[in-house]
Length: 277
Image (cartoon, rainbow, N blue to C red; front, side):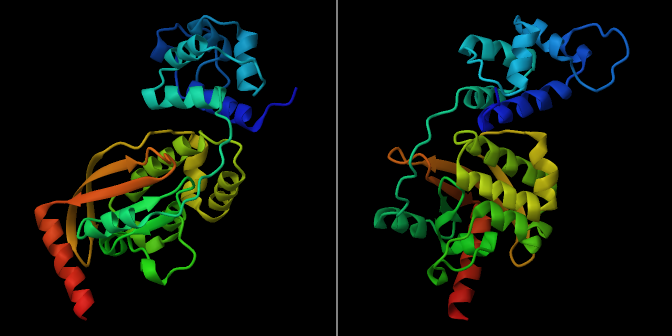
């Protein structure tokens, strides 16, 4: 029986996690010469207390309907992080495809985003399309003016394709790896979604960085954290990044970058100069 798209994604993810481990990592003694790096399938099955043929069926993307306990045992055997464990469950037991809700945003949310200036803030939808952003976000993230656009840009496309944006960010490749891991975590909720597949294909074709990092199968949920960024027009900037989701439509995320006092003052001056100039 042919594996489903989500099943094949599950198999690829399991292989990528298995191949990054050595027997020593999991307390096993290695016997004989290994033709490939990583654990063998039978070793993962042994650690997870399941049959080798059954585990092999999982890696081959076949429909074997693993229980939550089995998935948790596999996660433990493969030393998965909590984000990776959650990802494993999503791939093995995908959610029913949900209709994309109308992503027209109400005036209240628009006023909130604009009122947050000089703190950059923007809203993205299920596919990381930018739905709304303020003036500070335009400046810091080099997004085109909101009022001038009929077609809203895609946040991941903007990050990957704007060479100047990446060039100004220290350690850009490691930061991009985290962003792509966030994108994969969102994609896992809708592994058979046509628009997601089209975006991934586009990024694979047009972005060498995405093409290099996507096959790693890294996954990470979005977390609030301290951010630092340098811009030649503004200097060093510091932010506390927070992500908020709508209870009515969890596909819509509000990304807020609360600036330090010094950063906010410099952004405010630049915004005033641009308005007056």
